[in-house]
Structures are given as C-alpha cells and as structure tokens.
Length: 556
Picture 1 (tube, rainbow, N blue to C red):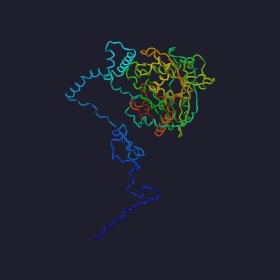
Picture 2: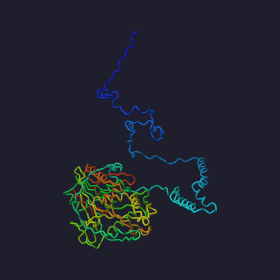
Picture 3: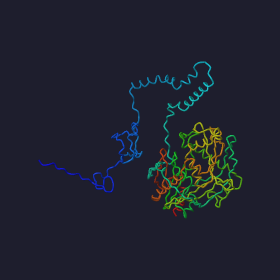
C-alpha cells in the first residue's frame, strides 16, 4: 500500500512587519475591521443596533477601537429629496369596531373627574373652614388648571388643526426658466472664509445728522409718540447706482449693496421666500434686485414658533411687514437733531437733486471693497444713519433700527410695558428668537459699514387694535461685533457663502440668473432666466432704454 502523500502549505513571510503582503491576492481589496484580542465576541449579527438592543450588553461587547467605525459602518447616501409621499389615508373601519370605540369613550368623562380635575373638585367639597395655606394651594391649582385649559383646551378643535397654508414664492417661476443648481442650507452652514482683510474705502457720499441723546432716557413711564415725516429715502439697486457704474470700470469685479449681501450672508436663518437677480458680464458680476423685490421689506416674527398668519387681517404677515417698514422709515429720522447742522462728507448724495438736500433723509453711503481671494474683489455700498459725539469728543457713526411690538398675547412675546424696564435682557432674547433673520441682517449691515454702534428702538402700538399709532418705549445700543457674538452670528460663514456663490457664477456663461429661497424648504434654488424676464408690460416700454444704457455701461 503506497504511503500517504503530504503537501506542505505555502507560508508567506512578511519581512517588513505583521499582516498580509502584497503577494497575497486572496485577501486583496477585502475590508478589514480592527479588533483587540481582549474584545468579547457576543453576537454574530445585530440588525437592531442601539435602537432595540439591550443596553446592559452595550459595554460588554463594545470594541476598544470604538463603536460604529470602520469599513462595516452603514452609510446613508440617498438624498431626502428622493423620498416620495405615499397614500396615508385611513381605511374605513368596520361597524363593530366603531361601536367598541364608542363604548370605550363613554366612561372617559367619568375617568377625567377622578384624574386631572380631582384637585379642583376637592376644593369645592365640604363647607368646613380651611387654613390660609390650603386656600393658597387650591388657588395655585386652579391657576395652573386655567393655564392648561388656555393652552391645550382646544387641542381637539378641528379649527386648531388646520394645515399650514402653503407660502407663495417671491416670484412666479416661468416655464422657460431652467434650474441649474439647488443648495440646501445644511451645506451653506458648513462654509467658512476666515481671515478676510479690512475693507478699502473707495468713496463716501451724503450727509448725517447728529443723534439726540435725550431718547436714551426714554422708558415705559416716559414714552414718546412716534411722529411721521416726509423725508426722501432712496433704495436704489446695484446696476442703477451711478457711483457703482463709475467704480466698476477701475476697481473690483463683484458689486452689490449691503441689503443684498446681508441677505446672502444670513440666508440660513431665513424662513420666508426672497429672490436676488445676478447679472454676469464677462469677468464682472452684479448682485441685483427686482423692482418689487422683498429684499427691502421687513418681516415680523419670521423665525418664531408660531409666525403670523397668512391672511388679510391686520396682524397678518404681510400687513405686519408693511407696518414695520413704516416704523423704520420714521423712527430713525425722529431721534435726530433735525434743525442742527449736518456732518457732511466730501461727495454729495448721488440720488437727490441739489434742491432736495433739505428734504433728503440723514444717510451716508460708503462704497467699500473686500478681497475675497482668488482674484475676487467685491465692492459693496453700505449705509449709515447718523453720527454722535463719543465720550472723548470723537465722531461715532451709528445705524438705527426699530423693533415693533404688535400684540404680546398673540405673538408669544413678553409684554414690553411691564417687562422692558426691569427685564430688558429677556425682551431682547425673545426678539432674537422670533426675529433672528431680521436682526442678523441689520447687524451684518452695521459690520459691513464699519459703524461704531447700532441702536435698537422699542416701538409699540398705542392700542393693539390700531396699527397706525405707535409710541417709543425705550432705546438700547450695542457695538455691532459684540452683538453679533451675542446672537451667534458667524461672519466667516457669511463670507464663505458669498465666496461660494461668486465662484459658482464665475464658472457660468454670461447671462442673467436668479437666486430664490424656496418658500417651504430651507433650500436655495438658482435659475437661468432670459433677458428682460422681470420687465412688466406697462413699464417695459419706458424702462427699456434706461436698462439698455445701463447694461452697455456695465459691459464696457
């Protein structure tokens, strides 16, 4: 009988270290999970993970290299936009199930009597005298009960469960517009452009009046009525600014106003829809706005948990925005010394005639440029409202804005007349929560303009049922950079958003584009639009020549 033949296995010797070598093709491209010899092997496969697993075994079978790392970790790569809604309507129940449900609910009022309302009923049982402590306790229980009924008593009311109204977009999207990019806010929040240098002052125009410091002493006990003035305030867009038309020939390749740039830098805080027009001519980029754009409009309680309704009432979102614009048109001019001599800059206001200087509002336009790197220089027109004398006799430039109270009971805010003097920090915290986007834009504009201070005025209605008469309840001032830190406003992230959009449009061919905020989702959507897409039929014949001349100047 022949002897058994034994073939020795091939042993690969790794002379450079421990583990397989490059010659071992059997294990090539196979994922490897690091482990320790002291790890306990408890389960072969645990599909439930940490959701349904036993918490007592989490530490027992945990790897020393950490949980959830390595090649075997599940990675979800699908976008949420790929999901589609399915039919979630309830199927009709048989009749016997309805009867059973009805019989279960028959005894619910009796159960409620012995449950939540028992303390309230016990307070009325018996005629014996009760101590002062017991009476105070029962009053507290009744107060809590009324508060609970006020907040949750109508939860089962079908009128309270109406679906939120779908917001309309800021501009009607036409069929010939092409979507070229969609950017979620989550991606924009991760951008950053640190170490942006100090700006270069190119030109300063206009004149400023001095701030009346008597308004700093106003309180709820010495409130002052808000008066209306007829001063001229211009909101000229980028391409129609004669100073920008002159500067673009010699300096910069990106041009915009502070209202437009602040909207982009703080866009991740926005909720309501808005849009910005972008024109590209060769190597130059112009961020512009439409005639009826919502950029210059103000919002009220945009970021609140319960924003104003979208209807035609006095306290609707649209009417509250118009009321806020009216207040911010009159308030910054009322707190100035109107009859005193103005602080004048070398260049006059470029948007008024010489005979309109006395009727023009107190405003200064600063044209400043920033170097964003990669040969991208942006020129921004910034605004300032007034000037004041500092403690050492120096001139300080100030931005003035007004926060308005419309209905403390319906808006979920604090009552200013009872809380503003003693709890001003709580009132400001509520405004930061309810109007985060608006306050962030104002602070960004003050930082871009290089203002020394930003002043906020607290303006409330004289009667909450009348939106035409208002009173000033107080003033509060901050340094713009310190206030930005207080509200967690990251300017590096804002510059990162602007730089990303500039690089995106610089890589596109010449033409007209539109940036829109989705009315319901936190997403920016960019369209490629034909020329003259925003000219109305009535104004097109009157403005075509002016627009053509402006475009020719910008192109040249």
